[in-house]
Length: 342
Ligand SMILES: NC(=O)C1=CN([C@@H]2O[C@H](COP(=O)(O)OP(=O)(O)OC[C@H]3O[C@@H](n4cnc5c(N)ncnc54)[C@H](O)[C@@H]3O)[C@@H](O)[C@H]2O)C=CC1
Ligand SMILES: NCC(=O)COP(=O)(O)O
Image 1 (cartoon, rainbow, N blue to C red):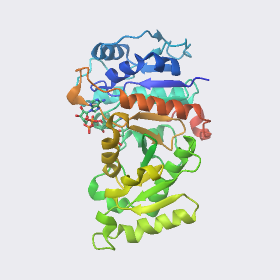
Image 2: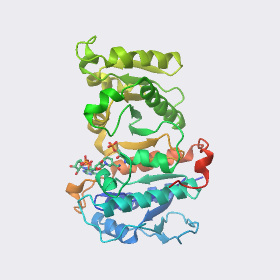
Image 3: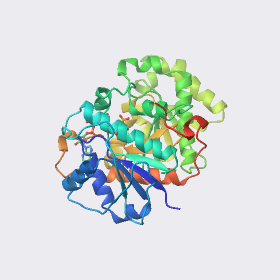
Image 4: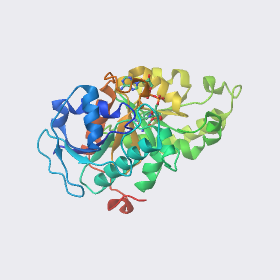
């Protein structure tokens, strides 16, 4: 059966509408899934205008189940509490509200079984903060509204390599104090479970150090000796397939030998992954009861409206979420089965 995918435009001030338009202008994408666009109609039309593409879509009735016809996306014309017109190329509370409300609607529809997974174009985290998200990022907001009952975190994937992070959207000065046995084990388990769900039968996972050259026996920091090394040993004893720890500056040279790399902070993984393939990188929101994917790149305000945003990463995100949505779903916690929280 074709997966049914809810698709949202993300931040209307950025390149999201343009890249979604370009994604859906590809006939093979419209054929590969039943697509429910959760989007303001004016923003979708604007995205098509900027991208210089057009495709046919039908309209869903609010509250009604969409009736999918082959190759024709269904649009749920929805903007939540946001009010057009949207300012462009700048983070605003209105744009952040639009992003959050459309994501919430897409999540509700997916939890309710109308769709099997969701994909969204980039949002702007400052806009989310202006809109009052109440969390550091959308991952923790998703965890709340979906009542995720275990560890959650961003997982990035590119060309078959996956990464998870022990810390994510926190100031760099706080990273060291957040590197604990519990958080390292969570990051290992999160990516291990995601790999299994993605069909990797025997995942191999490498763990990264924090300090230059793994701290050189404590000369440049003790996190490796005190926490990371012993936790890697413990993970192995628990039966998790981990190797390492390896210094951050060379761990990605081993990318072909492993399926996943656990990094200690955001940019350890993201710089490497974005250099390896900026236009193919995907972020999966790990630990959620439903599949959620988005491009690893952001809102690209500097190229808004120019019609030159690359479609590659949202194409990859769409492909990843289709694969995850086609796999048998781990049972959602009872609390998340009927409604979205909050
Ligand atoms: N999927 C998502 O929701 C993501 C959202 N973000 C958010 O996006 C916002 C902006 O982040 P930045 O650090 O400025 O990164 P960015 O990825 O938006 O921009 C970095 C550079 O890459 C270029 N770029 C980005 N996407 C492109 C595309 N598809 N085609 C061609 N060039 C592209 C931009 O023009 C810019 O020069 C932040 O609020 C960040 O949190 C960041 C990553 C992922
Ligand atoms: N929405 C996903 C996202 O923003 C991932 O971006 P980042 O983790 O690279 O900041």
